[in-house]
Image (cartoon, rainbow, N blue to C red; front, side, top):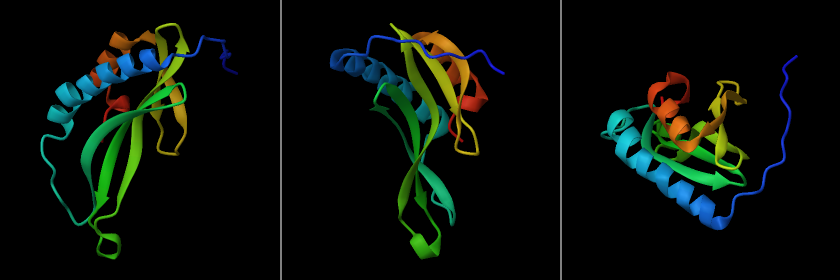
Length: 129
C-alpha cells in the first residue's frame, strides 16, 4: 500500500495560473516543439500536428493534438495528454505521466516548476510520443 495522502493547498489565483501558463507555453514553443514536432508529417494514420497546454482546475496538462489520416475519418482531430502538473502546495507540483491505460500516475511529487519542466525535457515517460 502506498503512503499517499491529500494535502490542503491554497488554490492558485487567476494571476498565478496566467504566469505559470506563460512559462509553460514558452517551454512548449521553445523546447518541445523544436525537438518533438519540428514539422508536421501527414500519414495514412494518426499523426501529431501541435503541442499545447491548458489549465483544468488545479491541473496544467501538456497536450499533443493529432489529426486522423484514415480514410473513414480523415481530418478529424483529437487531443491526448502526455504530462500533467497537479498543484500540490504553494509553488510545488506533482508531475504526472499518462499511462497507456488512460490512468495518470505520479512520477515525481512536489517539484518546483523549473524542476518539473526539466524532467519533462529529459525523461521519456513525460514526453510527447
